Length: 231
Image 1: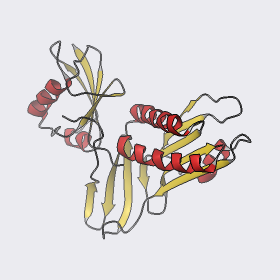
Image 2: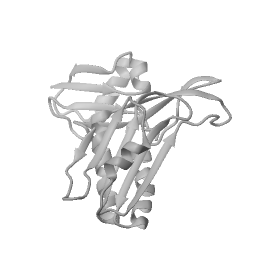
Image 3: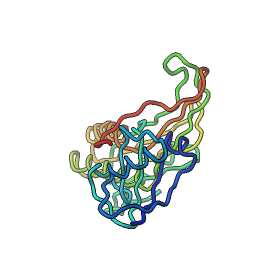
Image 4: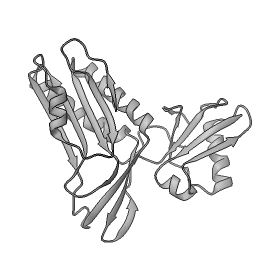
């Protein structure tokens, strides 16, 4: 069967390319595919997560011909969802353009929502005692948009009717610039504040975005976390 394989962050650099087309035996599981790749290409896939057709997958999932399989190192912490009457639509995006809080505020403005809460994450320097000159952000866009929508649905289920704005920066970002903006609007301030905070924690664990930091000691991938079963 034919598969399309995608590699991100350190895996892409180790392999020297981001996509492979492979022909493998029918009935192969994700784990068995990973074992073949480690033997054939010398990749270290232990501890990596996997997505199949833009959804997180279990290592023992059996693959089908035509599947697209993405191998994801632990993550370092636009589309819209239709609106409901006068409530703003959700907005999710990854972009190489500078982020602006004003865009989030404008999008979430609605007479029915009396409270807006925002989070802006910026590149900091120094970090761990090292002066940082820049961070390169890399992301798996199709899966990231699905994750943003899923996380928004989780907080909406817990805190009630909300509108959510989530945009993450890709490419090179320098200290002081925003890498992530989250906005939540609600009829009530407590729901907006709590939902914004919980949404941040969910995204830090789930969002497939990686950070390659440039500091005075050199260049390195920032250690991440794995919120799903790994190889």
